[in-house]
Length: 157
View 1 (cartoon, rainbow, N blue to C red):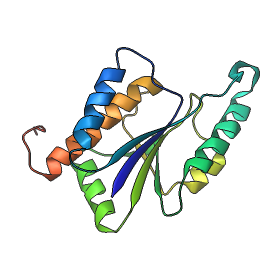
View 2: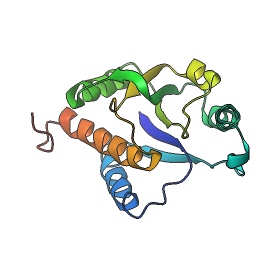
View 3: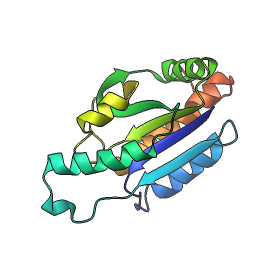
View 4: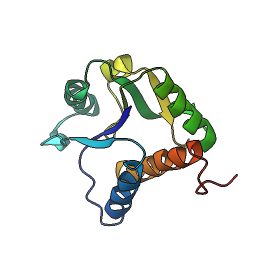
């Protein structure tokens, strides 16, 4: 199984980028992990929130591949503890999912057609984080899940 993190816009923060890259490097020791970026919209300030979501949706939907298991990282999604998230990933792997795609939307969330394409929604927290920061939190949780599944000493209960 492959895991992909599909996000709107690049991470350019010098505070988050090294951490994201480090966790992706670590994850790749366990399974293939891809970071895919949908470009930020040009002239976004001239668009309404709904127009931005619609244009981002077009780009996101084009990035999905047949057979993808699509999971939106969304504040209204199901909350899981780290051990539950690890078990959730393991279950998806056991069911033959080829590519598990986690989607990080733009600043206004997802358009209805992206919600319709998703199989599930997961929340990393009830709090709101920047789209730059959530990437770091997410890749750390994927790495943590891999170490939990292999009984390695990274995670402590």
